[in-house]
Image (cartoon, rainbow, N blue to C red; front, side, top):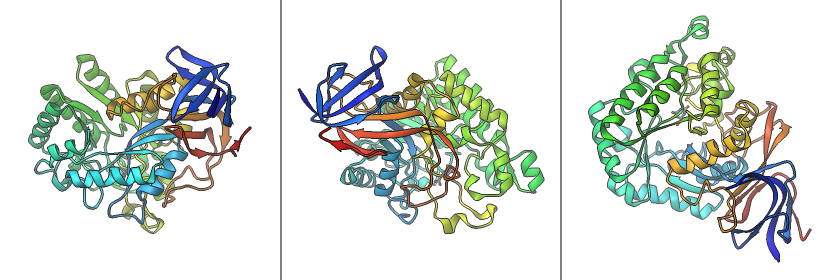
Length: 426
Ligand code: DOR
């Protein structure tokens, strides 16, 4: 049988575990899997690569509408495909913020027009992300939104959050919280500790995250909502999540690549690319986050890909906006820094994120009949990124040696990224 495309010789994640096999793709689905899949009109040699479901990012800033000089759906989709992603959840802190259905539909449709990754819009918890009254939650839900967040800001008012949790829980959605107390963080620019003391910079204590998370877990237990904590940054946060899971609270957690790759000592350079929210914390926090991910207490790696233009970042550290890029290097950090096994890698970067985002066509281990939405990653290849598909360049990863490299990404059988030439008819 002639397949449209064959991925030859990879370590493939199947329902039976990892097997060395070929994957035959035809008409957008996996048509054959094993050692006798036949020829392909196109063949990709993926010897030595981990082959599994394309990655899912539940925390991406695409900046469209309103801040297209930083990023747009097209440039963000290119970066996502290069990072091995088949789907991304777009954050709603755009201008205007995504607090009603028509805005969510606009994002989803832009994603479809570009066609490189499935762009799933998330919606605000509160109108205009102002934290005062609920957004048009029903309308957002009808537009396909399943994750609700005021990301960039915490929903600080407990009564507002409680109502939103009750409402979203009745629908079956997820409340995803930027868990940073606004009062404890508003004047700070970095982690409050030895480095902030030396630099004479106002800091943000661990407690800013931990207080909000602890409060939210109490409300999540009370309302029964599916609660997700974004960009966990503290060791104590990992323990709070562990304890809540033990009690049966419907909580999931994510960690960003940068909170695993760096700690607050990076800020001593005053390079504003290291200015993120929540801030890079201590080495012990970094280690606890990695351990929490490896153990599975933390469910997902989520990039918090946050593009900002050079002009915006090339200012004194205190004046720079928070955020760094992440889509193109998240897989490398998960492999090279967190040292995930192949099974854990796909579990935390595809299977569980797809479940959190309610994306049934994503995060499927490979077998005949499933959509050919696939990534091939070479875990041993070391490389030094020199550029990015993003419109912005705020990434300390550019120029840094990384281990683990995305080779090919497929969305429903279409190759959306390849870092090695594809030879048709081989
Ligand atoms: O570093 C961050 N950047 N953290 C956030 O929560 C928001 C994000 C952004 O939108 O730039």
